[in-house]
Image (tube, rainbow, N blue to C red; front, side, top):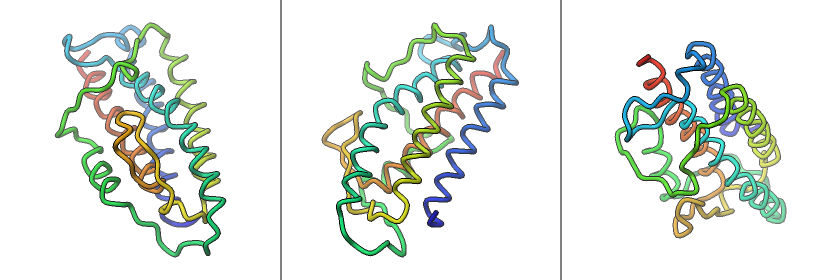
Amino acid sequence: MLPQLELIAIEFLEALDRLHRLRESVPERAWGRRPDPSRWSVAECVAHLNLTSQAYLPLLTRAVEEAREVHLPPPHRYRRDLAGWLLWRTMGPPVRIRTRTLPAFIPESTRAPDEIVAEFERLQDAQMAALRAANGRPIQRVRVASPFNPRLRYNLYACFGILARHQHRHLWQAEQVGGKR
């Protein structure tokens, strides 16, 4: 895998490790507990990531297919476009800019932690497969519309990085909540 995509793959794997540590350290009874009504529980933070992955996976699949149709030599270096860079830059933890999410991405935490984690693992595998399929393709030339705001478009390379940072953002939030037992 090209080095830039390998770095994103490492971020995805680190997010998975982070989730596993969270699952081991936070008791099951605490997963559904909100610290206050305006903040999500640990389960809701992870369920939100699952909803996000479910929304992005079809977009990733289509965009990778589109990149396969672009007949250009493999890139030496990928670049994020401006919109993708700005979103990527503000996405990571610690959270400095809070945003409201769309109702479709507001999670329900009624499922058991092991089910939520298993779903995250399955979706993470699918995102990693899409990342591997993108390797060597001109993914900086293919644009993806955000399911959060369809007017917001960025290239596929930026999209992969945004997804990884988004995971770390909400896992960081979950760690903050989980640490307040």
